[in-house]
Length: 309
Image (cartoon, rainbow, N blue to C red; front, side, top):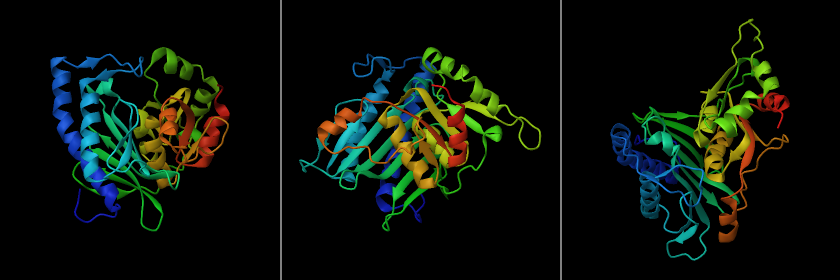
């Protein structure tokens, strides 16, 4: 991280922690890919998800390291039940963590991401979010509430160049790159292939007569961060839905950048995740949310109008 930064102090500290975690885990993941020793574990909490030794290691490391920046918090990780960390029996802050997202690809050193979102229970909304991209140059996506109460979004590259994210895409559907987590054949790829009206609309020639619409694959929270940066135009999940740790960190970054996230009824998805008590936090780990996220509200509505679910 550069010494001069517009990123609020706590967000900058957590971003530096995420960067250091990625520096530690990256060589281990490359070794796993090259040796084929991927450390797969039985996943007792989410039986259909891949779990590795690396997920569990990062889960423990985050819990230990976060205390230096947030003395007391509720730790809500994908890999364990929520627990209170620190001396405060009822802390305001809930730290939501997905230690290693897309871990089945991370152990092949293809794609790997790590998510942290800090949520204030007293104001019922996130105050910071950091999504780290382990293998790519665009390395950190950050959303943070500044001292004036304004949500801001940033991208920090691997060489510590910092960009403000405040100009998401204004594209319409015929010229859009729309992504989807389409990797699972039966749960996601086949349902996407059946969205004929959406695919026809995306294939409509743009104003210059060229067919510019594209479907791409993307992953978890980073897919919403790519929309926030204007790298992609929209992302959607209409089949299975995303769990809270996959959606909410990127949701906050995209909100801070000025983008749109709606449910499949066209309603904006609120930042209040109802994490009021330890029981509420535990209950919030199970439901899944379907959504359309876009750089602009018009594009989100265009996509929604073509979907049949």
